[in-house]
Image (cartoon, rainbow, N blue to C red):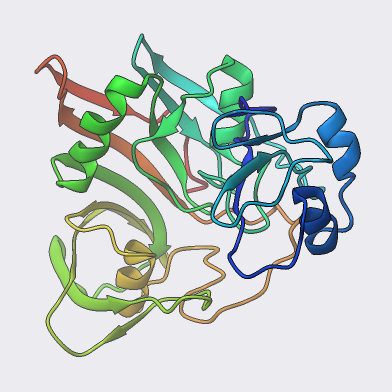
Length: 291
């Protein structure tokens, strides 16, 4: 298969059954006419599932696969650096800034932590063990080797990591803390926001009050589950939404190049027992919120 290029894996395409094309280039030129397929084939940038170069004469085989590069669309550059907290043979732990997505998806491809770090460290195997929302800053853990990927990802999927967050949000003196919030959160595909509904809870967050000043307060959050936008929804449902949250309680569209109002939510720390060494680990963010 083709190697990573500029931190991105090649695209994979399954050639469908029932097509009338006689050659692969005929199919590709019809389906994706904006790409220069003949040039790509001359430069050996199109290969099959056995890494054999595809030429302009290669016959169309239904059910076979082709791999190729595509140039990502131009993206607005996120003007913040990724802080490095720790690295060893297997791990890279970073401080992800606000506005930077974790993985390539949708309109965010090159401007993601994964792609930036793969290029920076020349490490195509670099893979996040978990994810943070684009709007959330803080501690993000990557594996650098294939043998480490599964143990650390399972650490997160089995909820054997204590995640500690910090938030600046509204303050209501009538609310008692610490408190545990449980609710049922659902997210529909293609819809920007998630929502709560009645029924058996599938999300849980412990919330502690750190300090308060006027109509704002600083909170420490410990999510037991990891539903989409869980912390943002739980604070908003209490009537104390996170400062600068464009989604809750009311969705507000924000221009892609507006970096002036970062969500005041920070993944402060990760605590876990290392699945490879058995040693206790704690990684803590060096970032601060705008109190």
